[in-house]
Amino acid sequence: MQGSICMTTSPSSSQYSKILKPIDNPLLGYASSSSSSSRQCLVVRRKGSSSFTTRALLSTSKDFVLKEFHQHKALKIISGLQNFDKENIASGGATHVDIACDPELVKLAISLTSLPVCVSSVDPAAFLAAVEAGAMMVEIGNYDSFYEKGVIFTPEQILNLTKETKRSLPSVTLSVTVPHTLSLPDQVKLAELLEQEGVDIIQTEGGKCSNPSKSGILGLIEKATPTLASAYSISRAVKIPVMCSSGLSAVTAPMAITAGAAGVGVGSAINKLNDVVAMIAEVRSISNSLASSGKRTANEEQTLKL
Image 1 (tube, rainbow, N blue to C red):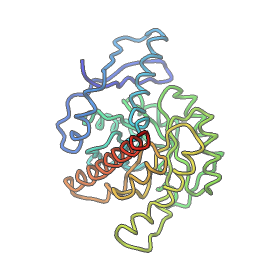
Image 2 (image 1 turned 90 degrees about the vertical axis):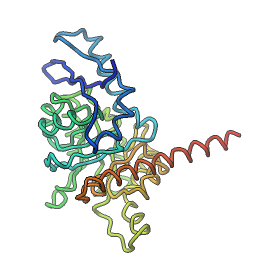
Image 3 (image 1 turned 45 degrees about the vertical axis):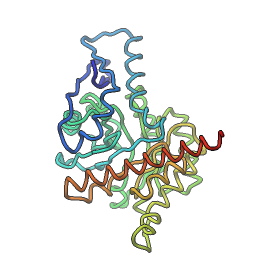
Image 4 (image 1 turned 180 degrees about the vertical axis):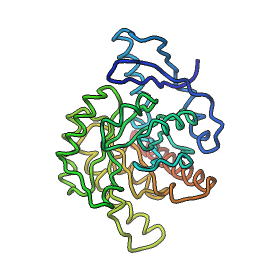
C-alpha cells in the first residue's frame, strides 16, 4: 500500500499511526503528489510491539524525514512559532511544513498533506502532545517573536532545552536553531555541542537582524547575508545537515545550498502574501530555483570527473 510513515510515540510507549489520504488541497497537492508515492505506510495495530519492530519503524520514519536533507534539496515552509492561524498553513512545492506546536494544527496539517510536519517551540513539554497528534519532527527555534520582546536565548539555555527534549522524545527527529544573536564563532561552537547531543539538524537564522540598504536583487542578497554566513561556517564544522533559514528568497535559496546547507527554510517570503495563488507561485519559484541549482551542481561535478 502506498501512503506515508506517520507512526508517533510518546513517553508512555504507546504507538499508533495515521494513514494520510490523497491530497486535493491546491496549496498542498503540488508538493505531496510526488513524495507520497515513495512513502511506505507502516501501521501499528496494537500496543506492545516488540522493541525491534518499534526501532525499525522509528528508524524508517526518521530516514523519511531526513531524506531530502541528505539529497541537499529540503524546502521547509515555516508558518511561525506563534502562528496558530489554521488558514495560513500552505506549502505548495515544499518538502516539509513547519507549524506552531499545537495538536489541533498538527491534525489539520496532516489531514491536508503527506509531507512531514514539524512543530516549533521553546517548551519541550509542549512537543509531546504534538508528536502524539502526528508531528514527525520537532524544532527548538523560530525565536523571532521573542526577540521582538527583548528575550534572547543563551547557548546554555538552548543546550538544556535540547537535553530535555532528547530525554522526552529520544527517537523523534530534532532540529535546533542556533541564534543569530551569537557571534559566528559562538554559533559554530554551539552547533558542535548540539551535534554531540544527538541533534539531527542545525538551523540558522539572521533575517531579522539584516537591514538591506538596497532594493531589488541587491537587497535580497543583503537580507540573506547573515544566515548564509552562518550556514557556510556551521556546515563546515558539523557532519549533520544544516538548514539555512530566515531572510531567504528564490534569489538566495540556491546560494544557501552552495554555501553548504542541506536545505532551506522560508517563512516571511510566503506569509507576507495574502493571496493563495501568490503563495503557491512564490513557493514554487523557490522550489524551482533549488532544483535548477541542484542540476547545475550535478553537471559541474560530472564535468570535473571528465
